[in-house]
Image (tube, rainbow, N blue to C red; front, side, top):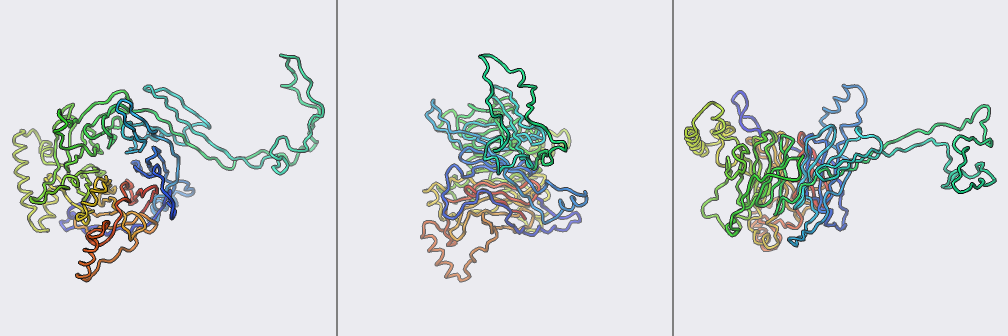
Length: 588
């Protein structure tokens, strides 16, 4: 998320909009094919290197994909470097393996069915070439391990018991042999081949318990090699070798949440992770599955006093002591684990005050934040509510002043309030002053978001219909590019498109990039042009508002089909998005 001007004081031009192209699709749905509920993708995640991609579905399965365009390069080093630096290359993945992560369960104490649906997937740090990831459903988190092909021996199987959970990591290598000495046309599926010399008389019977001592070292005199040897006899060769990886659960973290788990996030220290439900956030150690520590608890003494719930939580990517969590009221709280064991108070509160006179029945519903993501450098946060995307700067002046020296707490607060007032006054200036002020806001946090992107503003007149069919409670995810210059999120399918839509916004200073893409093999398909005649447009809009599935622009949409889950490659402009049971990948 690069903002501000150049080093010489000039204003840096925003990057041009990207031209997105189709790369791959896995599980493409054919025309008229019925989609099974268990095949719908419910989670998607790249690892930190971008070489592996994991998806989870409502059937409790986790599918792993491996990047292939960086492998198999043979030749001089210069040629390999040219191939790696070529602008025409883009990430290409292949199916690697899949495993059943969760099974449907039943809580007999609460008479509650626990679905097997995967809610979240998070990659952990690699160790000794092995892949680790966390997956969770509504109640149980599991820690999985998978070995790479070069570490295990043929047909190897490791068995160990850790924390009461048996862990098995197994690798099977399948080899194909050719140039064998047996002619398949003469074997008829049996061995030895038809026509081969076999003893005419049966073996003599032995008394009970008897043993023929000649069987081990005895060579039959019926067989002899010709003087020149057998010319057609040769050694078989192995032509191909396939590796089948089987992952097994290493640890199970259960019985720590009374409510449905909505988020998991692993820490930058590589040792701990958090899990969040509607009312609590727990801190786990990867090596200990028997206990966890409650660090956030918003459950009131009387449940009738409950006004908001936790909707998402995320660890800071570089500071292991910081994490952020969002609420159903549209606020984001940044907490520091060094303050206290139970983080009842927050270090910083991010909240957008609603304009006077705009409150309605749907205000709190659409303000609920469904996803929070940190930028790769940890400076910015991206949040997604039903209508908008918001980019926030979490660096605030108080921490910066304390770095300068031993400044009293009261002075820090007073200076912070003064400069915040100055920043609020500067927001009223013209654009030229805004760019200069924006450089200051990168260090000194203001109360409002850095940027707000309108995603579903055109659906505001249809909130009643969306509420009746529960679509207003859809949880859309968001993602940022590795360089922080762009963000992306999903949307609904419109009837004039063949598939779901997702949107990419440029968040650099001065950028007007707002691209709408279709989750199909033609992502840049031309959109329906906006009517130029005002009267015709008004009639179209009125007709659209009268139809049950139309927005204010007269475009009919299907609220039952939406793109909720997508992920951005950590180092390249490549997006993977889940449209129902299909995984689409695009590059720019």
